[in-house]
Image (cartoon, rainbow, N blue to C red; front, top):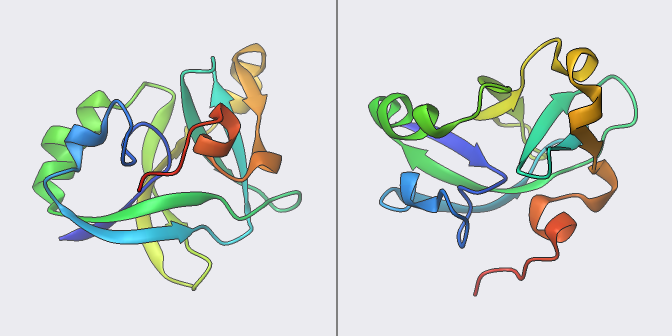
Length: 130
């Protein structure tokens, strides 16, 4: 089992939630304030580790078997994202997907920085799940 941080469509109410819905929901969490947050073509979010200008980004944590991450979760992830390890605000390290190295420079016209929103739902104006 691995703790997987979700911060876009895989969160409750999202179009990709079916990929993690059958696994244990650990809870709502936030990253450490060391990430920038981007919207890619206004289709999905992407985290990027930064040395300055970062913020704490909201998301959800699920306890998912590594096999399911490989077979169910990662195949639906866009080419711009890769599996990585991030730091939560409580100091834990967990799996997540983040912007692939080099994409900030190679597709800047497809990225909108949304760090100041602190989360995908807030950026999109979506309600919190009940």
